[in-house]
Length: 224
Ligand code: BTN
Image 1 (cartoon, protein in one colour):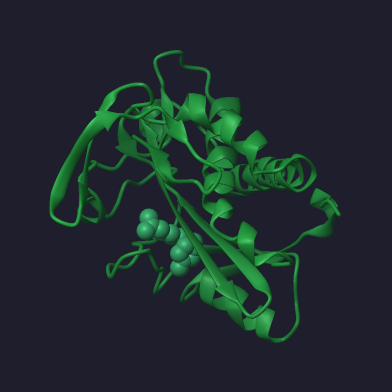
Image 2 (image 1 turned 30 degrees about the horizontal axis):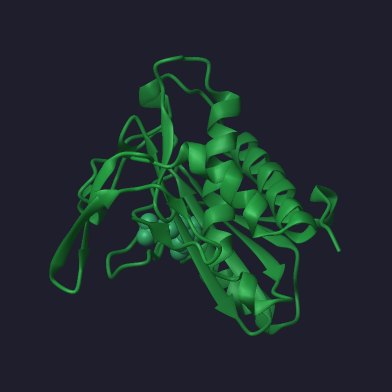
C-alpha cells in the first residue's frame, strides 16, 4: 500500500489548542488521512515540558495517518525531518544556507533550530506534528541551539505553500519506506546529518561519550 497526496484533506483552524490534540480526537472517532493546520495554537506541545509558542505567521500542522505497523513508529521522526529538509532545499536559492538534521529529528538552518517535530501514537493512528518557524523564532529556551526562521535567512514562503510542500515530500518518503524499507531512508538522510563524520560528544547516564559520528543503524540509533 502506498499513499497519494490527494488522499489527504486539509482542516483549517484560525486558532486551536494543539493541532496534535485535534488529530488525536479525530483518530478516536475513526477518522484518518487528514492534515490539521492552524494559524495559531494556544497550547502547542513539544517533546519536553515547555509549550510550543505559536504566533500567527509560522506553520503549525499535524498529519493523521493509520499506523498499520507499530514497528515503523520511531522511523516517522527521521522520515519527517527528511521531508522538511528536502522542502527547505527546494525553496532555498541562497547557496550559503545549510540545512541539517541534528540526530534524531531537529532540523537546523545554519546551525540554528528551525522547526519542531512531535510524533505521537493514538489507538491505531500516528500523528506527525510539525511546527516550522517562517517569520518568527520563538522558544529559544527549548534547546541549547538558538532558534531561527526562514525569512531571516532569505527564504520567502507562505504557510499554506510550505505545508503542501512538506506534505508532498512526507508522502513521497513514507512511500519509499513502505516500498523499499528504512535502509533507503537512512541512506537519503545520512548526508544531511549534522556533524556526520565529525567528532561529537554525547551525554549518557551522566557520562560523556566522545567519538566519530559515522552513521545510523536500522533502528535509527546513532553510530559512534
Ligand atoms: C519539539 O521541538 O519538541 C517538538 C515541537 C512540535 C511543535 C508542533 S506545532 C504543530 C504540532 N502541534 C503541537 O501541539 N505540537 C506540534
